[in-house]
Image (cartoon, rainbow, N blue to C red; front, side, top):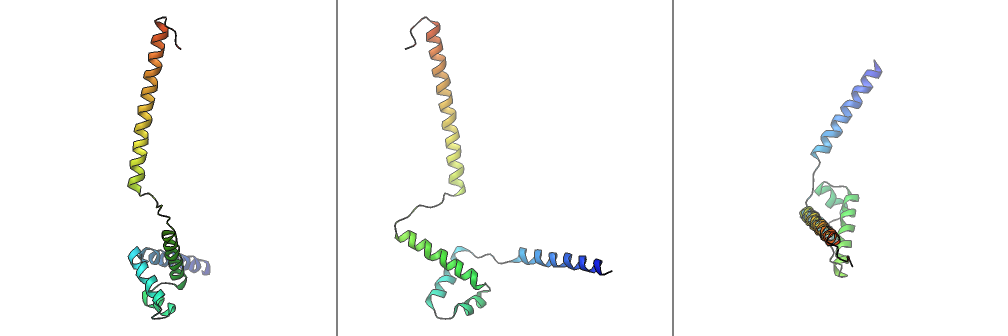
Length: 124
């Protein structure tokens, strides 16, 4: 009887964990920036800020580190950024089209060379 209750308990715990995971709050970039800047101002403690916002202190500190690193890179002149999905798709499509055009030109060139050789001309 105990084994059955233990397995149902683990199933219930899994269900609760799944619900918490599905309902967890997702912060936008603007919200993260606002929270980090508020923490940097120092008007209240980080612990109080995190309680008010409903986040763990470790999450605040990881956001803060990312924020400061991004600012440091930007000030150092590193303006390289990651490509968006649409840009990647466009570049892949363009690359494919260029490869197809190159293949067609190479085939046409080969056919012309063969026709010249067949006519008895010197292929040099």
